[in-house]
Image (cartoon, rainbow, N blue to C red):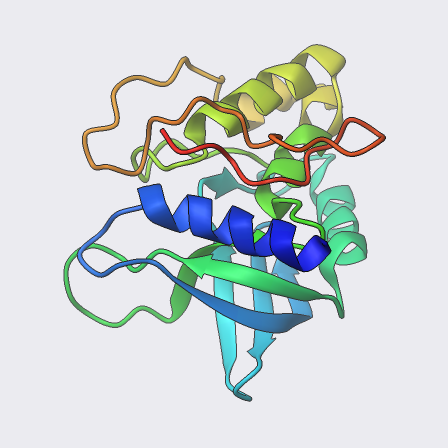
Length: 196
């Protein structure tokens, strides 16, 4: 059943993400947590990729939440298999780091988990992305609960506010923010986001 949830989550995200090349999925196992939003992943074909999670900003250097964020991500993904929904960059050229959503067995979106815990904030500088609405709602909740970076006394200076998302002209955005379409017994989402 978890395999179906993962496949549906990856398919739903891939249907709405757009760039010059279509998104694609890869399976792999996390070998290293580089920082609170970057992973090294060994793919099933034997290659290794450095993956930056889409739409996330790690706590700033010197933040009281930085070490905890890296520890939390490590506990969440280290040595575990996951699906990557890779969204190729617009334009041409090679990038050393791949941008992707990471989906754990059971369908949990790693990026959403990090934002909910206050281990990462929503990065708006890269423009809109599919999970912007969902991540922004989670960030507002983490802010209100003063968890992670939001519990630091320097949180206001170290992380951008959570603005209300606007139009999504590039095709990455929109969405109804429902990435928790199939909640489990604990209320955590394990299902795919609905298409926008």
